[in-house]
Image (cartoon, rainbow, N blue to C red; front, side, top):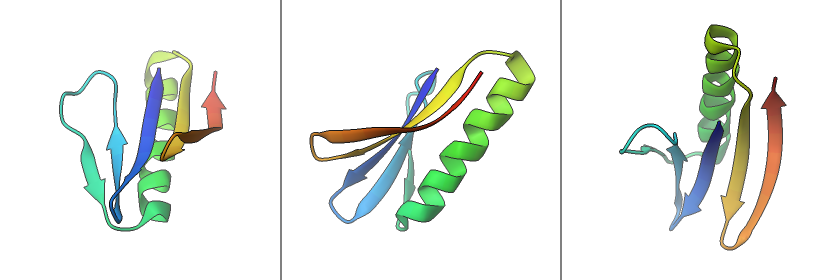
Length: 67
């Protein structure tokens, strides 16, 4: 499962692949910490591999992976 943290016009969105709505944050650090905690928790609960990707414009970095 890939959770995306996307920069969009001065704010950040955390996008979960199984949820239709994203969560909005003003601070990128808070958005990343939230996504990281979500990925870690999902991995602990399901055993499924979970990763976090940070996207800015057309560039991205895969930052963490659990499992």
